[in-house]
Image (cartoon, rainbow, N blue to C red; front, side, top):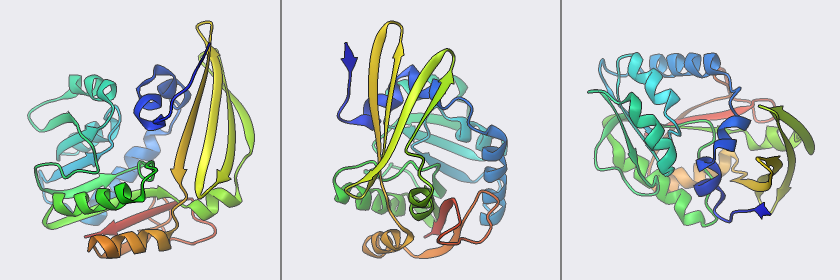
Length: 243
């Protein structure tokens, strides 16, 4: 039996296999990025941060350890259930749809590690940025950390395999109809699984159009987690600061 899904982000993220496949992500690099970003933004002591699409909360937890008052939200109920074990007086987690404004305002709203561009309907992408704007206080900053689509497409690996915890994942990548698509297939516990990740291949120009429509202003763009200058062809990331 092959299990498939249409709304990939609503179910793939809720499977244990998603977390197995990506378990080797570099936590040290991620934490250094949070250090660099919060220092650059010069957020107030005990400032409020909304971690939008927080997953299981690893960045929220680290930001809280830095002294910030953090709310992590995600559409995945299972991820939020997992994250809630780490809650304290200045760290909370909530199931929330990022296309709708969260009913609080913050010193910063972080949307990290390409947690944007999942939607089939373009209006949902615009609504997400409009919601971020509504979630910022008068001095707040929005941050979207997105892949640099042009670099990714130029360096796309069409197919590879990755074995983690005795599961071999076949990963097949392509660009189709403006999306960067990764098909993931594997066998686990005697069953065959197929999932697909689809992310809109937004360029910096595309984001600038969305920002203009949403009424926010792009302040700066960085090309990597060390906050070095963005280069259209060679930077791996598009880290956009706006308000």
